Amino acid sequence: MQTQEQDIAGIAVARTATGQAAAVLRRSALHDDLRIEIFDSMAPLEAEWRALERDNLVSLHQSYDWCLPWVETFRRPLAIIRGSIGGRTAFILPLEIIRGRGVRRAEFIGAQHSNINTGLFSTEFLSNGDLTPAQTAATVAALRGKADLAILRNVPLEWRGRKSPLGSLPAVENQNRAFQLPFLESFETSLKQVNAKRRRKKFKHQSRILDAKGGYEHVIATPDQEHALLDLFFRQKATRFKEAGLPDVFADAPTKATLHKLLRRQESASLDATLQMHALRLTGEHEGHVPAIAALSRKGDHVICQFASIDETLVPEASPGELLFWLMIERLHKEGVALFDFGIGDQLYKRSWCPVETTQHDLLLPISAIGHAAATIQRGITQAKTAIKSNRKVYALIQRLRSRRVAATAGTDTAEND
Image 1 (cartoon, rainbow, N blue to C red):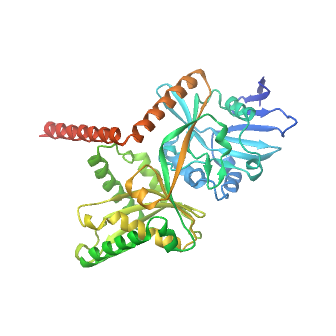
Image 2 (image 1 turned 60 degrees about the horizontal axis):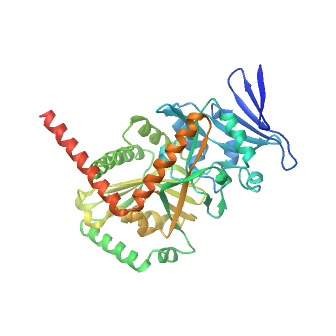
Image 3 (image 1 turned 90 degrees about the horizontal axis):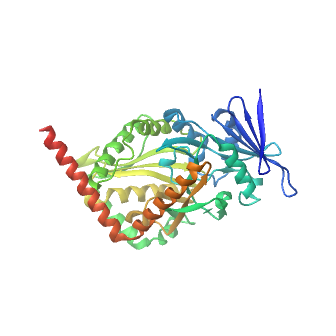
């Protein structure tokens, strides 16, 4: 196999006849050689990928079983970065290439539906701190020709006491924060972080309302229930998005297909789950009605609520969504979970449950001249969104205008169909 090699700022960049690219950082007095390779498929990295993801602080969204269904369904070109030192894998950044508006963006696989991204790093590499400028340059060199801009979204620069090695990359604060409830030594102590007395009073009130109508049950979907429950979530969420004047981020068929695939990747012998459906189901007077649904993911002691929906056609006064969160949190506290994560997005119900807010950043790594321009534009857009969302009056006005626009569009469509 023929290769061509050139030296760019102390980095050897080798390109094979098949287009495979690798960048090798020349040995210095401070560290061993760093070799950066770009892979266009996941399979060759599976063993070392799964070894790195055993780290409890690696995000579920960079796990092999989370990424694979997105790759299988969307079939976007991959640019998976492996950094190795002395022949040992130091890190993996699972990226895919997304084309839009003349720009090729390298982003984390499935990033549109990720709540937190960390990348995967070896213990040895983590002990050395941030990516150095030379290591960053090696990464840029290897991506050249494949992408114009790398955007690593929703990366906390510090996560559960650990600083991210990606923290040295150019960054802009993401407009959304994530919200978490740490689990303490007892359920009662955990509740005290968010006003235990008020929480228990509300739970009893909700239970009395539903008991008067025949009762309720917390459902954790079995394999023969989970797909129907996920489809019901799609219908409930579509209604809620339309009422709020928001685009339905679950509307496209590939996203729905991927989430269905994620249901099938649960390890039966482990508490870990890529996606698990939970629901509040009524008994008695409204037998079988499901007023609240949530999908949870678990990796180690970290549980993420990936998405949730409610149906307010019946018993809205019981706040069924809040009740379902109580039931899930109470159960998970008994199962060794340390952190319940409500995910990104500022909502009142999240703030009512969560004493912890996590600031996340989008890391921007320009690769080409087009990428430099795109990074400047992206930074401006993100900062504008952050400014708008931090001003509650302006954000509320925009939400009202958006709702009116959706309502007007719906009215036009109805008139045209009559």
